[in-house]
Image (cartoon, rainbow, N blue to C red; front, side, top):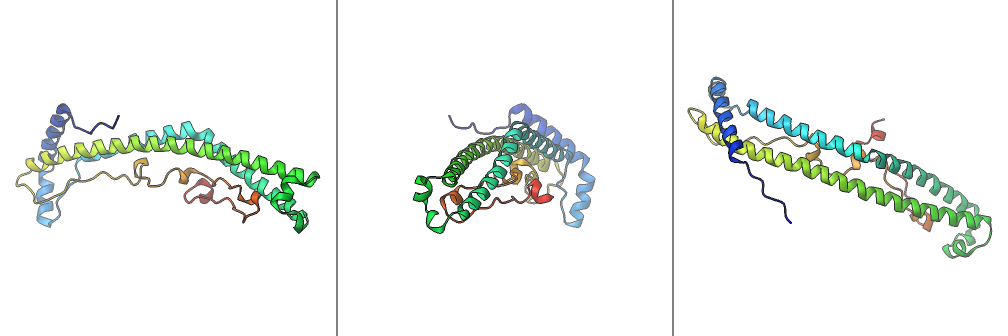
Length: 230
């Protein structure tokens, strides 16, 4: 089932039109002054209220996301640190072997404490990587849901502003020229984030390619994360 189209109901439309007439009457002196200066005034109490309400809704969605994912984010941080330690230990034990014994076939079939320790580290790294991927999928799914809910609220507010702005311009005397309806600012809210949850993720999940003998992949700190600010 697809999403339903957004629509401003008749009661909300009448309320917005009434507020537009009231705002136009209240702001007529400042509008006349601004017209004389060549810069029409577009800030009204109703638009400010719609912006504040949309920001508050986005903040609630963000707080709800944090409350539901705080444990997963903490576990993901712990997993990344444990993976980094396991990969360092794997590199140390691999370097202790003779160059001829570092091949993957020797590690998989070799006898002795050193080979058993390497195989144990590989299994543990694979398990922790799988858990990190599972956590990442869950966190991203919850973030996407919160972001879509916040974006939909902003879309509904933009539709209300379109109805309000048309009535507001009609109520102004003399009517202004071509003035576009103001759009709500989304950049500072959850609905304006282009990336996923990278800014809240302290470190990237460490890959297991080092256990396979390829170039090491060190954990990185995401821009804007708590670790990057310290």
